[in-house]
Length: 322
Ligand SMILES: Nc1ncnc2c1ncn2[C@@H]1O[C@H](COP(=O)(O)OP(=O)(O)O)[C@@H](O)[C@H]1O
Ligand SMILES: N[C@@H](CCOP(=O)(O)O)C(=O)O
Image 1 (cartoon, helix red, strand yellow):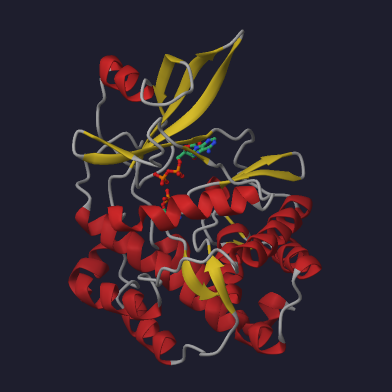
Image 2: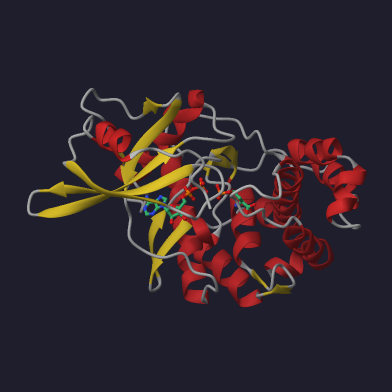
């Protein structure tokens, strides 16, 4: 679960009073997610109610990056993407401080996160990802990717072979693979601001329609094809990375290209970018696994899910994107 900080009803009501959204009626901690604390808030508004998401930034997010993250939500929402816009307080601020931590109120979007996507849903996700890339090109702010291939290699090396082997005996070899992939990283691919973590739990869907894209807190400037590779790796496998769902991968790439056709260099790079994408999640999951106490109130994610995906891309190469 992900509510790391307890906020009393009084604290929440006092916070909400700084926004022109009506009085707080209810607040529920949201179990999903691992990085931040999230609450679903309901306020009294005219004859009905309104729902919002309150996020408290807890881990891996620098407050100095909030203008980028929250500004990006507003930019994409204004461009017509299904992205929650931020609610500013009565003084115009996009975030406030509560108990020494930054919090923001954002629009609640409907929809559910799917566990086993259909090709129609994968195609819709590919298309909306391409729209995101196009719309983000004139965002006007930038943020470097601090979780790129060099970081994956460094994080795995820092974990150390013994700690990695304690998770799984095959995990230490990933440090060498990450160094190889970092060394082969292709320069010059077209860039935009990318989401870089568009997993099924960060997409809200109604039928075959994407109703929400959330959790932009890893967004950064990087190759658009890398973002497609991340999304491909996150969506196109079942059984904890053991089986590749070719129809999902194909529908996603086709959906993406229905909006933004890939350049030949991007298409050629996809297998390596997908390996890099897998190693990015192997490294952060391994680091979390080692650093998170076993009794913490958060479910650790298994790095091996992405080792298996990595091996599939390594063995399959371009065929995975045929
Ligand atoms: N704008 C939103 N509309 C609806 N639900 C949301 C919204 N933002 C977050 N959520 C819910 O909160 C959960 C956790 O949010 P997320 O941003 O993914 O947290 P974390 O950064 O901790 O992973 C999501 O899985 C979703 O259920
Ligand atoms: N998608 C990442 C975890 C990032 O956490 P999030 O809850 O902020 O999406 C993974 O699966 O390892």
